Image (cartoon, rainbow, N blue to C red; front, side, top):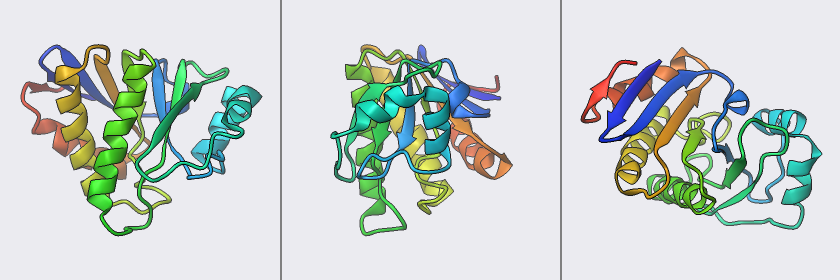
Length: 180
């Protein structure tokens, strides 16, 4: 595990399954229609139970850059932040991903979350480059934690070494970084 201390706040990088983490909020990179779909969405459906899907009924669609919060059902998290980000290198990808990350943090904070877990935002199925995702996520989360009234911990949860390395590199550039 790699951890970066940002003043009194903390960002951690771990390999694992985000749906198994004990955090206040976890982030799901959602489709505009808010259907859980396959992959990570299936894990949420199965582990979270029918309550998550039921709560999502009638809430979509939402626009790129927007995020909403639901309960997390039977997951260890209290909330899921469903964030719709850019897909497949569409126009203004960086600006849209920046907006998505910031709106995700705001939604989690408004829900009262103190800890939040992010996947590599859009870098899987939606084709967001890992270097862009890691740079923006570390930059924006570390900046947000410095001024947040509630959020004190963020976890970036990756699945493999391919995802891990770009985040490790970005975290090593954060002031106050330490290996955890």
